[in-house]
Amino acid sequence: MAKLKIKLIKSTIGSKKDQKATVEALGLRKISQVVEKNDTPEIRGMVNKVSHLVEVEEVN
Image 1: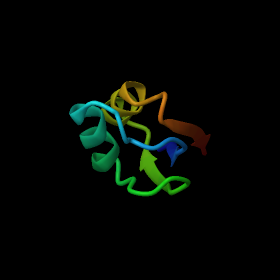
Image 2 (image 1 turned 60 degrees about the vertical axis):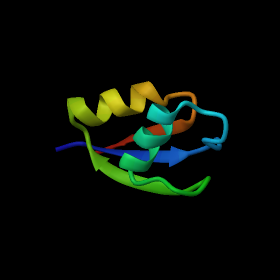
Image 3 (image 1 turned 120 degrees about the vertical axis):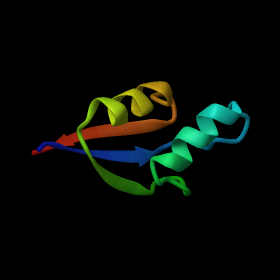
Image 4 (image 1 turned 90 degrees about the vertical axis):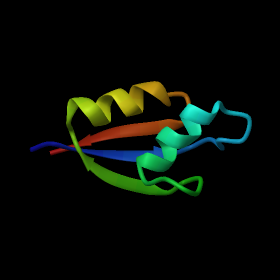
């Protein structure tokens, strides 16, 4: 299964509560932190919701 590297590039300060919760659910706490997640529709939806805060790279 393909993987996604998700990196937090902007702070969640000033973001809506649901966006902060989504970033935390992805496992991101600090700026420049990177996590690897499986490429599933659920993760894609979470990334899409906070796309202005994160950077995504596909890894095979």
